[in-house]
Length: 145
Image (cartoon, rainbow, N blue to C red; front, side, top):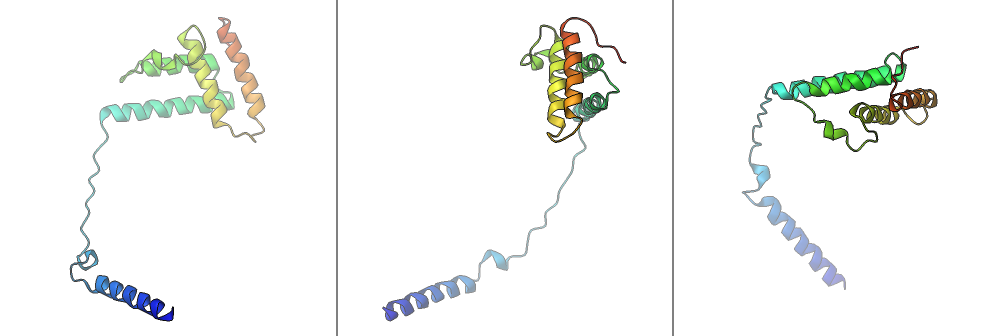
């Protein structure tokens, strides 16, 4: 048994030595110089990024209470009409007859996702937005306090 173990160790050692001493190993070649070219963002990509930033600010305004849900929904619709336009059918997965109601539902969902479950303001903020959403759904617009 010891002879087999010694033979196995000797064979493995010889194989490792053969690999390590091979002259054309990749480790023997110098590393390739890598050049990275960063292209300037297209006008379309910049416009989309600006729109996302504005929508993010609207969601932040909804959270702190400086923007009402109806105002935010109309602002999102106006932003989506800017170039490059976002088709209204994107909001068809949300409930509501009108685009304003569907966008309002999307905004409430976005606020809900943004707020941590342990945030002490969460329940009050969502209750305020759900109240605003019921006003929008009923056809009225929730006015600022």
